[in-house]
Image: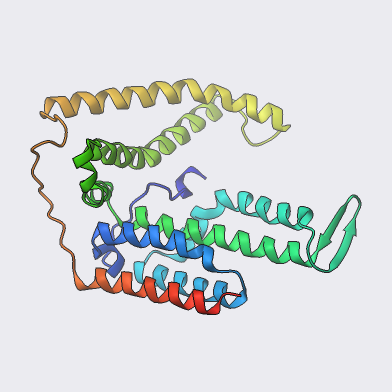
Length: 265
């Protein structure tokens, strides 16, 4: 399971999405998160779904890898769906199950909200899958650079976000190793009552925290040994270059937003 989680992982490939400027990708993600809320009927969600599949196709990320990586959030999506199904009282009554009543409006809203949640996670996951953490840092720092004039530590905040993204798969791999080591010593994480499973997970926390603090200390020592003193006066080895494909991506996003406005109920 740990190996299938895609959050924070980067997959090298030669695709249009991989070659895009990180600033354009960040702007695209922010824009998509906003316009996804414009969808409110079958036509708009179908258009959003088709557009998302087109982006996934351009990224050259295998759909099987994406689906496997999204399995951990499927439970949350299903919980959102059933929450709307059982507690939204709108439209025609479809069925009664004990104390619960299911209405047509609740089913439709559950499908739409769950699909919206799924599309958001899918598109935002493509950012880390197609962009190295250091490029994400450069993009964030460039976009929020004007905030430096009001003494906002943009470089430090961008670096913290980049390190956080980089350490997510590292910590997940470390958790997987600790679990396998404890399973070899007789620990059982897959069977028994839920309370027993929770108790079995608790011994994972201490070695995981020790490992995390150790890695953080090693990283801090390495940065100090290399003379890191923040973003003031630093030059860039990688120069960001805005290309025509970056402009086209934002234009396509604007066209999508306009189409959603026209088609929404």
